[in-house]
Amino acid sequence: MTSFDKREKAFEDKYKHDQELQFKVEVRRNKLLGIWAAELLGLSGADAEAYTKEVISSDFDEPGDEDVLRKVLADFETKTVNMSAHRLRNKMDELTDAAKQQIMDE
Image (tube, rainbow, N blue to C red):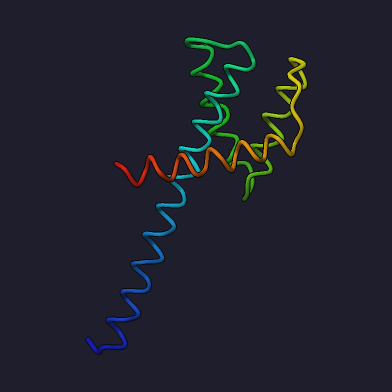
């Protein structure tokens, strides 16, 4: 294996690792978001767990965070929870940082 091949393999491995890490962070963020949103929606116990799973699975609808944002905003609107898209995006950013820290600490 030439040094070029070794470097190429190292870049591919790093890219794969970074993508896996990003996926884990997004799933953890969505879990934290689901828990937070369930509390605001007045859900607890099994209902809160089920809702959290819905939030996590909503992220698989399309690339990016818009699908999660739309789902949670729609649920807040249905239950008349006062929340703007801007405030929810800020919360998602905050939870992304928390999720990344949790993943790194594991």
